[in-house]
Image (cartoon, rainbow, N blue to C red; front, side, top):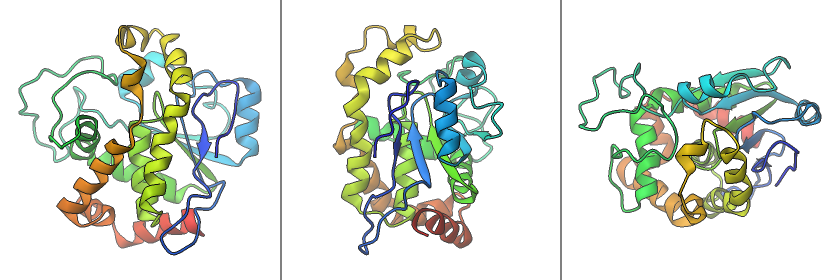
Length: 262
């Protein structure tokens, strides 16, 4: 369900998504969006009016530093930042050095063409799965924050489609959302991609990195999420079984399901 605010292009509530047993994800529990930096005062008031208590920011440390505090920083909403990128000061998920040959950019930004940690049958899905390999700490922490939020939780990154799309797809999978509905929710970001990219190009943090990229390269293709979830199923059996390998517990599972399904 789209929510239109002045300062966001890709904000929606995942409530109403069907589950495999005929139920639905409860509205007003989990929102997803693009970068929050341009929220207006009215936007902040509207988000607070929805019951927002926790923001899960999937941007890198570099992005956060460059963009500065978002307008919710003084609102009483708790801001949690969990980068999904390999950055200079972090390891590769198991406190081991990164032995891959490429040099990590000092400016950890999306759309930087680094070699993914894992090669799948879909190039973008390879990037998404690399998030899980490189930063399992952030993946588990983000999902736990959603589960434990006393009110509405909002997950965002820069565009609200790649890093956000990965985390939201995992959360919905734990809640037993219908697989096709998860894919459709991911793909819905394509409906607002022109507005999202235009907003990001107005920011010095992202403008140069977006220069020369065709708009079609930013689309959220269903095949990408199909490939990611299929690889998880084939490798681990299911999303919850994969998360267990990252330190996820049955209590976490029950808490997230209760959050999203009541």
